[in-house]
Image (cartoon, rainbow, N blue to C red; front, side, top):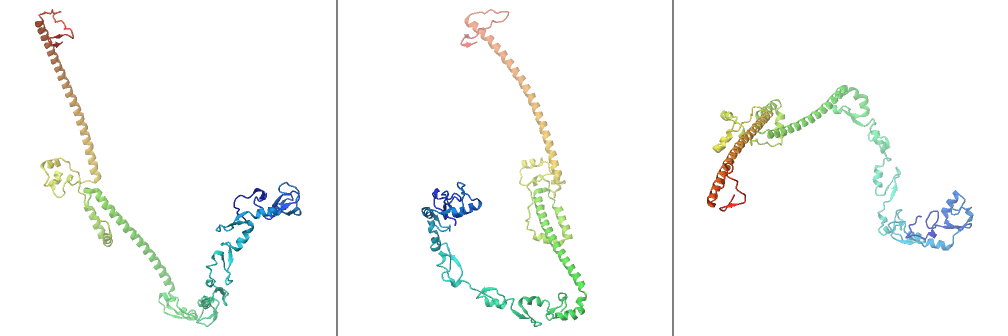
Amino acid sequence: MQYNYVGEPNPNLLCCICRAPFLDPVTTRSCGHTFCRTCLVQALDHAKQCPVDRSPLSLEDLTPTNPIIRALVDELIVECIHTECPQTTQRQLLTSHLLDSCPFSLVSCPTSQCDETLHRKDLAKHDCTNVTKLVPCDLCGTEISLDDLELHVSECQEDTTSCTACSVSLTRAQASSHSETCPATIVDCVQAPNGCSWNGPRSLFESSHKSTCPYEAIAGFFALNSTRHTQLEQENNILRYKMATLEDTVHTLRRELQSAKAALGPWYRADGVSGYSSDRQSTSSGLSSSISTSDPTPPIQDYNALAAYFPSEDTPSNRAAGFSSPSSQSSWEASRTERIAPLNLSTSLEGALVGIRESVVTLDSALDSLGRRADIALANETMRLNEDVMSLRANIHGLRMQVHTIMIERNAQVTGRNPEMVDGAWPALPTGRYYSGTKL
């Protein structure tokens, strides 16, 4: 028995072989070492030596351990071997706990009315009257409950019965196989599925009817016809599957066509679609009508956001002019709309996009040329303005010189001085001097 000790046992009470507290301890007379009896016996089977000091040792040299050591190891506190039980007790009292008070120990029924074993804690709610008693069947020996014994006997396969057709005595287990070979059993003709209405004893069918049955004479035809019928059913199932797949494909194509119609907008050609539909209706009106009635895709409205940029197909004048102006549009808006180049609806969407791209490239070239011309005109205008500014500066400089001469003469008249001319020119006036309140 394995013990779960509470706390760490004293190291002096541990066996040096199993490293657990002593169980039935014995001591050697030669060296005085103490071991568990079972551990030491197993060690001596391998070598006749003491496991501690390797001195010679035999079973005759063993003696019971001091009673004090036995008492110490027996008083160690251990847990109950049932993990569900929280009880702890001395090791020497564990056996009595398991036999007398542990609620999880298995015990027999106290009334001895049944052989069931159960936990001690469940004894109070144990009821022997609900235990099913098994009794053996006298025919087959199978153990069965007493309540079901009568029903079992009436259906027991080992019970003797007799054939209803030939009155042969046999067991129920043999009755099912006997009915398949009994010559007196009433059977139908093997060609009954093909129309033969004969029925009678199996012996007469084999001896007389089988050779005279008209359906048996053409049994090969029935076999070929059945094979052909099976093949046609398989082909019909395959065709039904393909039909369902094609209907799903048509529904998908119709939804994609509606999406393409919404994406193409004014370039959508309704006449081509209607022609396609008419061809389909002429070739497969039933399929087309079933698809059109069962298709849940709602109709998509025509996309007319760019209608003002396209010529009307009904009015030749509008087609030639290339625009459609509403009656409520102002004259300015009408004139602006007249200058918009119409898109070519006679070509495909790709051709219209190529034309738009060419128009954009041409417009880009025109804008580039216009930019360059504007740059040249700006440069020329700038040069002309520079020349005008230079001429204006020269005129202002001449005026400044004249004013300067007048101021010198005026100062001479005021001061009474007559400055002498140097080399036919007036001498330069000193800077920082004021004449009549004016700084020269």
